[in-house]
Length: 394
Ligand code: PLP
Image (cartoon, rainbow, N blue to C red; front, side, top):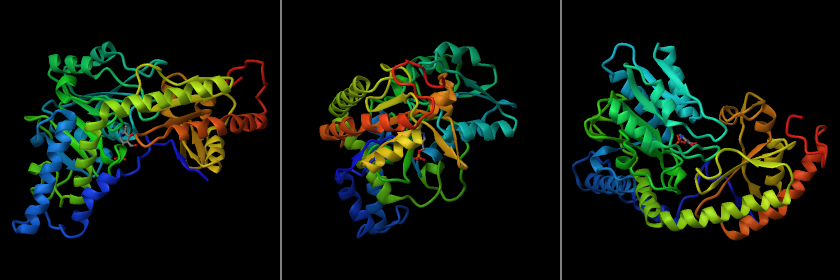
């Protein structure tokens, strides 16, 4: 059976070039980057090369890039770090209601410690209005943290405008750019960012490694305490093979950014248009223009999302729902709720996310399998009244 992978926002396959670059650092060049002997220096040079590769991808200086264990750690370190170092007595944070849990749960943890947090809302577009961010600013606002691209619906936020606002008011500006880096151009100078989070496994690099951009002069407390690694910003023996992999993934992403984005967008559009043509009562979640080139999130009225994912998997096609499972019950996704979808619509939403290795044949196979899967699942729905044009939840 041909296996089709359309879940690249969850994770991506390792690029063969990345694997080749990592191999020596898993075998013969195994040194600790802090050691002064030859083995250590091999490792250190590799880490510094990766730092340059990552810096180049986001237009930062190498000294402003710190390696971490991934997106989650970078988000935690940025948010806790800024708030804990804030000079005001009762700091205030601005974020959005559509952030990844790595940001949302961090903000909620801060609230429990007495920090006040404003969650800026988004409309049906899934795009933040910079004016809402401006209105939320208080004298004690220490940080604005707004994701670059949403992991569920792919919408891209107006960071440049928000960066200008943050700069004018002298407020630190962080972005969880885990889903944007490697897919669309990310330039920390143009966007006016002070901090940014990225993760290797979302750009055909290895899992368990990421990076954090920290603008020179930014004052933040470290999340972890230990040795003097990473300019005292993040202690712990460097994950040299992982860091080398991230560096190579960053270089590859930068080299092929435009061509990959164009090719993937064409495939995504063919997939989405093909579904809309073949299946009735389907709608797109979020602004169809302002979104990542690889992501399509659709409401398939009267189709139970989990059932859809399982049925597609049986046909060899991997995708995901817009809903996260928690303790046996399917909670509607906070992102889909935030854009105004009903719980029924959220539970009928699916996410198809492509990557540089998605082939035209993968799209053909998906378009071939999907209509029958939808039809079968709808026939099982007591609410499905074919041809009557009822919206989900009716
Ligand atoms: N932020 C966003 C937007 C993500 O999509 C993810 C991963 O799903 C993360 C953060 C967490 O990254 P990691 O898996 O590297 O911890």
